Amino acid sequence: MAGKLKIAVVKFASCSGCQGVLLDAEEELPFLVDNHLDIQYFIEATSRIGDGPYDLALVEGSISVPEDLKRVKEIREKSKIVATIGACATTGGIQALRNWSSLNDFSRTVYLNPEWIASLDKSTPISEHIKVDYELNGCPISKQQLLDFIVSMVIGKRPRIERNSVCVECKRLGNVCVLVADKLPCMGPVTKAGCGALCPSYGRDCYSCFGPFEDINVESLKKKFKEIGLKDYEVLHKFREFTGYSKQFREVKV
Amino acid sequence: MKSNQEPFFIQKKSLEIILSNLKLKGYKVFGPKLKNNAIVFGEVGSINDLPIGYVDTQGPGKYEVKKSSESFFSYVNGPFSLKNFLYPSEVDLLKVEKKDNKIRVLSNTNVVEKRAFVGIRSCDLSALKVLDKTLLGYEYVDEQYKLLRNGTFILGVNCVRAGENCFCTSMNTGPKLGDGFDLALTEMEDGFMLEVGSAEGERMLDGVELRRASEDEVQQAGELVERAARVMAKKVNILNLKNVLYSQLTNPRWDDVAKRCLSCGNCTMVCPTCFCNDVFDDNELKSGVTTRKRIWDSCFNVEFAETTAGNARPTIKDRYRQWLMHKMAYWVDQFGTFGCVGCGRCITWCPVGIDITEEVRALRGE
Image (cartoon, rainbow over all chains, first blue to last red; front, top):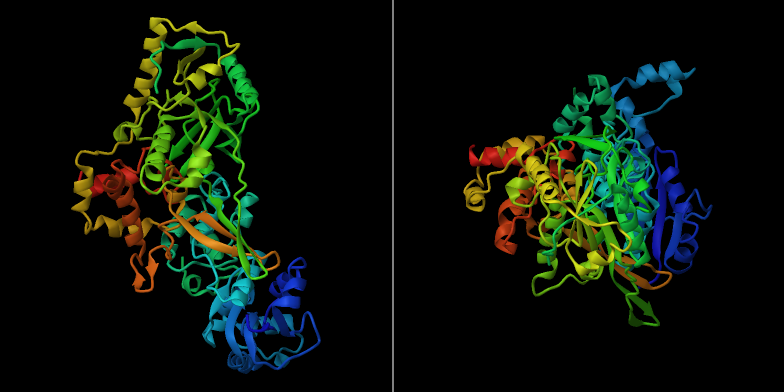
């Protein structure tokens, strides 16, 4: 290994929860930083700021305000590898719900001086603005997946980012299907694995915070949801949550 | 090694003695249990842990279980099978340690306890034989499976009720248990008919009040199982099935099923014979230990047939066809048997209720 991996943890429009997942790796982080990582930029963790270039940029958040259009391109130019972390960065996040509404209406309702608000019409994923090398999904991301990813980058192997459905993870754990046995509107059959089937493991339905895997069958799952009693708007809401603006979900209509 | 002994008749409560004998002889005992509104396999301490009286109602993409009888074994099967125990979803294959630039293989310290499985149905015993053949029957033996399979005790149960999605009669895998069990029960109104399949099975009968089953009882037990076979609603015509399916690779039915299939992989996960897996290394930098793991994968994973030259099965249609063809045709060429035992789990646990028997019928043009 030739020296430490220079990393930047960069934030766009987000709640900082995914960066928090990295900070939450209390067991692993000190060893990684001592031996393998050179944290160049991570405002949430250190006031030391390195201007780059970076070997790896972990990018959190969606592009939501005009100045970010420029900043995200700078990050790309400075970084060998760009990996987005979390639902905001990979799909536009919960703030992308405004993409189906009028920003003006919201601004006028919420703010006393809506004219002070400088915001883009839409909240969009990072990959719509720059080339992204890897995407880690989730709201928030999985600590295990993040650590595996960082270790892969450190030792120079292809990271294992599973492209199966949540159902595969769920069945590996020996869970009983909440969609079939409990008739809960579980999004597992269209959602990418990686969370460890967290919600179904606690008997509730997946709400797709990891977003869709590649070639999902939306029509078939919609039909199933209607069959178990969901109304049209409820079906639509299932696809309009944390990853609603992902490429596959944004076109869903009922 | 099916015994030629005549069957016995025992009281239902005598099952408790058999369970405690198993434990006394060092077995960890697993059997059907109620968990999260389904019958699953779990550790059973006594007959009170069994879901006595529960009856399952299954349909395509549908499963319900309710208490509505007095019988011990009135349900058929839940989402899980012996595969979950003998070919677990995640196993460590190899551990190596890198220290001071030297690589050392750490010994595999897996200690395997003797395990007994109670309430195993004919479909699942047949699935075990399929796995044995697939994983142990050829030049390359699956050592992990061999380790876990060795010393497995099977207390089987002949089905006297057919589940709505069962089609074992079509696949010649049930409802009557074939050989391979240690003990087998047939549940009757006031007791069990008990068959002994092995010397180890016989050893578990210490202290059990046994009497020879009367001719009437033997006949009655046989009729109960035959009736289950007779009323089984789902069927697959296996006549020349492999060749028929090979001739249907471009049948438009594949497009039709692709519109319904979610490609979620549930069918492969609940299938008692699906064994596809992914192998990867888990590297721990701090300890320098790398663990090579094997984890269940699914042919419905878009990544499954991806190569540097492209994806051999890029669409849902490709992947569903691969799965059905493997179960019902390719498996026959590979292993001399169907990969399907007619348990019906893939029908029940498919969220959108795709029914393999219906698909085969449509492909056959029946």
